[in-house]
Structures are given as structure tokens and as C-alpha cells.
Length: 599
Image (cartoon, rainbow, N blue to C red; front, top):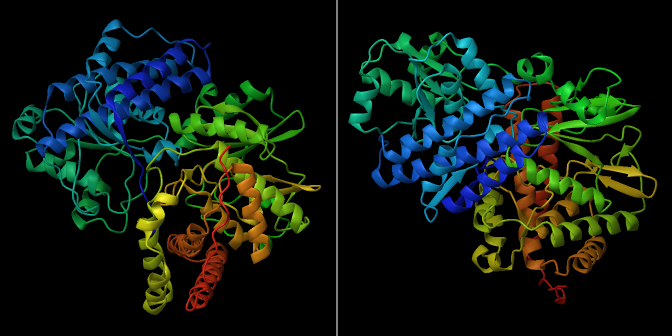
């Protein structure tokens, strides 16, 4: 199934220089504490993206990794900031020594006009991978300052600088594995290889997030070292989890991984069981005051036990993809403490959380603490799947919400799948789940994306209109989970508001008249009409994506009640898609809405 996707951004070095300078200025103006530390880490993540982008640009020009002036200067510069992160962390967020003038001089020496491509680090954005865990892993590793640290780009650029900084080792080098995702290889200048392996006594630390389905990126770097004469016992791995290699790993890589020294500190050990100043509970108390009890883990679908009296009523959940979340209580009120992302990802989401709440659509946010958003948890309210509100009022409120997002939440260009990519996904998923006949009929019925692309006005769509994501409070609804799903680890991303209209049609089972009313309200609130041709295109794409996402989720869990719920959801979306394609066998002409002036 086609479900997942990566986010890459084309930027200039100058834009990154300005952002890093702003982040650092903000951090150094703040009082000591977790919020200042979080601001420093935001600057570090942006700096890591800058260095990764510069080194990758040289890699693509040469076709291999080499020890260049930019590579060396970038990693030395990043290591200075890594040491500042370590100092803040070790001091319980109390110390932040000013950066040396040479740091800013080096930053300004990078060519501001150069174009780079920065890849979003999945671990920082989605999976609560904390860079500080690599500081702790390095400290506990027993390795010394003579270790040669090697980062795997992208995220390994910054992570390797943290490992080297804590070990007191020289600045790392970074490599870019290339090729098939399950059979990566590295391409390295022979002179760089020779210089790195010249000392036969030193250890080598390979640093990255993962491993994933194959672990081939870790494996490719280790293969290269062994081929250069490095003994296997000298190779150490710094991963982000303690699991085995995935099912697509080669036998050779699996055997080496199982026997090699691996150094990691899990998020739970870091933020739940670590030093008091490093624990999430203490962070939350710095914002809310003393808690009424311990924070409660509600990740992996466990939040449903707080909303539903009976498991038979639980909605399906892709528990492996859910973000880490906790429940905290202070002064008799319940608060959701949810990971929304480190770096600029988290900053943008907090801004949107405040914007949507002030407009009256979402729960009250109390603040953000180094990647975790704290917002009200309305435990006294039921979801829309278990409570009722008049259809007219519901449509009015959904329309106002989507219209507000369409007007006030614009998205940057190229931050979501193209219409052509959505079309490919829909046809492929339909063929895999429903058969080639259905896929062929869908392909025949979908409009030419090239004609429609110019009509799309990309916004930060919600992408999660399911009934259980709305709470009912009297005659109004409150939208929950409104920040993450158009900035998730999937291929959809930011789309035209018609994607959310399609989601509302499906999840709320809207009639044609209700759909027409919803579109009218969105037009009034946003100043733009909902393009009906785009909506006709988005609806089967939405169904195909939901079908694929639920099928993929079942494949990762084996058997059990969760799999049953996911399969039932997949069947539901598959049936709706089949019915939709059948109706399109003799479509009626689509009517465009009247244009409305943008105000």
C-alpha cells in the first residue's frame, strides 16, 4: 500500500542562517529552564539541517562523500552547538554559556545564496526521538575521545555531533547511503577512507535513528568499514531503539547487528525515569504547578480507556504510529501532554494550537515544553460518535472550522503530495485491496491532475475528521487532534480544503444537500469556493488512502482485537470506494459553484 512519504524542503543557506540566528537570539534572551533548553534544541535542529543540506549538495555534485572544507567546517561548527546542548542538559537547564564569536563568524561564511535541500527528521517530528538521549548513550558507552564518530545523513548529522561532543572526540564525518532502501551503499572518497582507518586501534561509532525495515543504512557504513580493514569488534552502533533489524534485513547485516555493541537510551529512561530535572512530570509542573498525582501513559491507543466504558466501542487506532501522550492532573483539571515535535515543527504547531483555540474551535493550550504540547483534556465530554447534536448545527460548525483553516492557515508550497501522487496512490491502493478491475475503473474516472493542480490552494488541512475526534459540549463541538495529521509521516500532507471536505463527507456520512451547505459555509468563511472538480477528485483519493492506511496498520500488529478493529475499518473504506467507483460508471456533469471574491 502507498501510505508513507517524506518531507523535503528547498531552501537557501541565507534563509537558514537567518532562522538559526533568530532561534539563538530567542534562546539566549530566555530565563533558565526547560523552555530555554527547548529553544536551544530548536536552533540546533535547524543548524543540523543547514549542515546536512550543504554537505548533501557537495555530495550530489561529486557523486561521493569527501573531506571538504565545508564538511569539516560545518561539523566543527555544529559540534560547538552540540556542546552547548550538553552543558544545558547536564546542568538541569541552568547553564548556557555564550557561544564564541567564531561560531557566528563561521555561520556567516557559508554562501547565503546557495540552494540546499533539507529533509525533515522523522524522529524529531513524529517519534519523540530526543537528541539528549544520544548524549546519555555516549556517556554510558565507555568509549573514549579517540573514537571516530560517523553520522548517517540526514538526522545523523546532528546526532553524531552530540555523540562526539559528549565523548570529547573530534568532530564527526557524515555519509549519505544511497540506492534501494533495502540495499543501501556508501560512496566515499578513497583518501577519506584511508585517513579514517589509518589508526587500527580506535573504535568507530555509527550514529543514526532507526533501524527500519532493513537497517541497510547502518549496514552499508559498517560494510564499508570492514572492507577498509576495520575489525568488526571495533564497530559500535548508536540507534534510536533497541529492537532487531526489520524483516527486510540481509542475513549478514542481521548477524552483525545481533553481536555488535549498541548504545542507546530510550525516551522512557530519559524523560520518565531519569534525573528529576529531566522528567516530563517536572516540566509539566513548571507550567501548571504541583500535579495531583503521577502522569499517566495514554499512548498506543490507551487514551480510549478514558473515553469509553467498553472496549467494544473503541474506534480503531494505528497504535504504532500514534504520538506519545500522557494525562496529567493539576488543581482538579485534566491536561493532555502530547508530543507534537521538536524544532520548528513543534513551534509551528503551538502557534496553530493557540490560533485555533482563540477562534473557539479547539481545546485550550497551556504551553509547549520541549516538544510536548500541554492542552486541556475534557474528560467530562463525550465524542461525536457517542453523542448527538443537530445535523444543521454540526455542519455549520464544521464549515466554520474548515473555512477558518482555509483562510488563516496557509501552507508552504510543496508541503503535500501532488495531485498526480494522490492519483497514483489511489489507483495502486485500490488495485492491491480491491482488484485490478476496480483500479482500472478508478483510473478511468479520475480527472487529469494536470488540469486540476492549478485550482488547488494548499492549506494546513486537518486530515482527521473522524467522529471520535470531535467532543460535544451542549450545542457545540470541540475539535481535538487538529495539529498533527497534515504534518504526519505520510504522503498526503497539506492539501486543498477539498481534501477535508471529502473527509467530512465520508466520516459524517453527509448527504448531497448537507455537502452543498458545508461548501457554502466554507466559501463564506474563507472567501474561496470549494472547487467541485477538485472535490470529486479528492473523495476517492481520501477513501483509497484510508483503506491503505488501515490495511498497512493491520500488517504491523499480527492478531488481536486491535487488528480486528483495523480490518473492519479497512473493509468499510473499501466498500465505500467500491460503491463510489460503481456510481462513477455513468457520472453526471459536475456544477461549479459561483466564484466569491476573496476578502
